Image: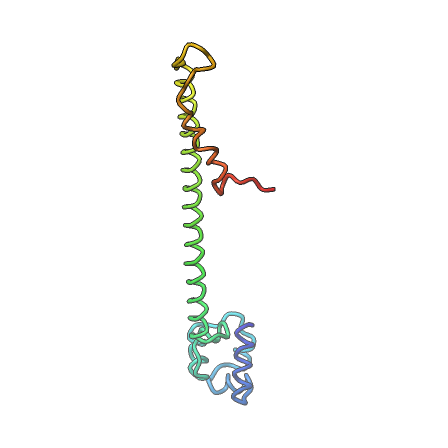
Length: 152
């Protein structure tokens, strides 16, 4: 809604025409109705005449309505910033998990090398005893982690 439309509504509520408003404020005939860009002084005088804010003439909204909208927008912005922070934290979390998985894989390779270098404790291959593979003892725990589950 344009300012002139808001002024027309205010005039209608007061029971006067725009021409009467121009006359009462000592403006030239048609100076409000035909004005594309009204000066701040003129807007201020019109706002005072009707007992509204200049903001109301520009937007059709009261200061309280605008403040309420701004409060809601600030709350939305705060929530979106929190979501963004959580997203960053999650990204860092998954990056760290991936690094740990890589380190675990490297350790498993090193352990396998050491295992392959061990000599059996007995000379007969059927009686050979070796230490259990510590990685096998944990039995595929990586598959139980929620981020490793495959969609299916």
